[in-house]
Amino acid sequence: MSVFEVFAIGVSKNLRQLNELEPEKLSSFLNERLRGLWSNETFTRNSGAGVRGTTRLANLLPLAETFFRP
Image (tube, rainbow, N blue to C red; front, side, top):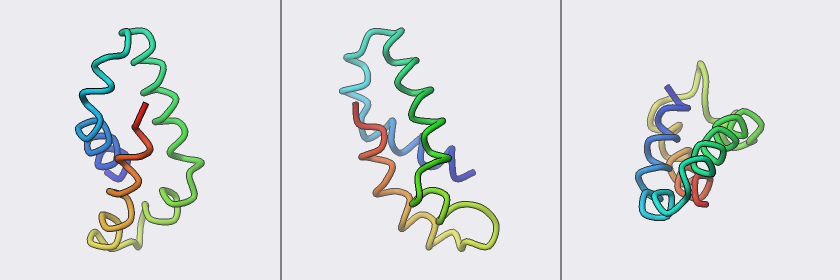
């Protein structure tokens, strides 16, 4: 669920810039960023079992916008 939340918010906040990328570059960028989430300390610390939804969202939503900025 955390991946979807970060992805959805990150893409929506950067939609204009992402739409300017060529389709191949967009696909490559998004795949790279999604894989990169699993090595991001903020993401791994605030996702998964035992993290409250309010805490998770408060910490992950700011990350989403910057993480998916091309």
